[in-house]
Length: 74
Image (cartoon, rainbow, N blue to C red; front, side, top):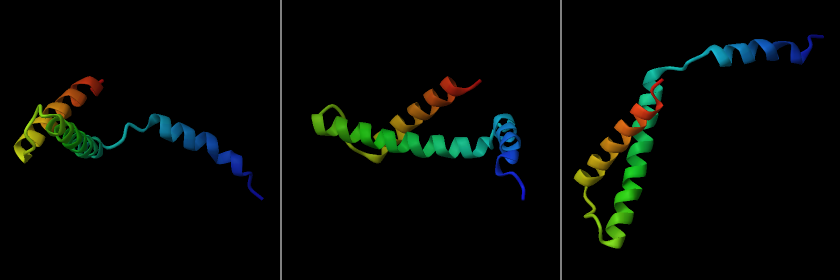
């Protein structure tokens, strides 16, 4: 019978050498930035700092997206 631990080294090497698909990272960044912006604008509306609108959410999401893109770029 084959040893189940024999494939672990190959899997580890494959995971460490993989950089992922950049399109998946961009989509994930866009979705999470939008959700975070939605929460920030809703909280800002609750305390009276911002007006809740789709335009405001989009502007904050764009700012968060660009900030995270620049900060995580290697």
